[in-house]
Length: 152
Image (cartoon, rainbow, N blue to C red; front, side):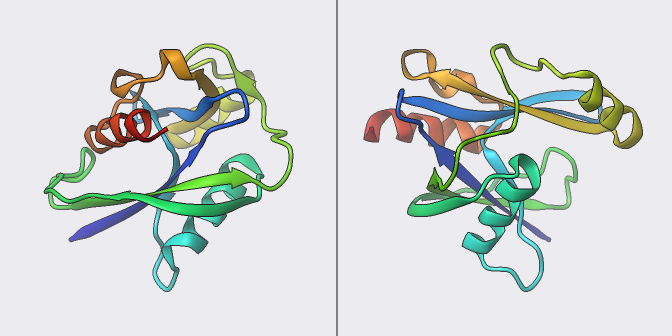
């Protein structure tokens, strides 16, 4: 079974990289913004939907960066293979979602969401000089982080 994920790389004018800090079933991850492709959805539409759902942010997808080119087993379901597709995105409006300064700074509402669903997330920018493969948790994201640093 394949699990297709689509992620957006947003680098702002200050040359900071947007990441999502998430707690899922008691595990903490820092990753790029995005999520799962739904049946009948194209990858670009998926990414636009994910940014609207997660950050209430309209984005333009500007360029493809990377698609997984190796086998990656899902961390949550060993019967699934993960295929991740990464695009550069630009915001089409100001970001209004609260941004954090430190990893996993969940507010009271986000903690309530976690108590109800077992999942929550928050967002922050990482300064360019501090950003590296070590900034993100997932194996494919680490490859992409290295590509971002090399290409920008």
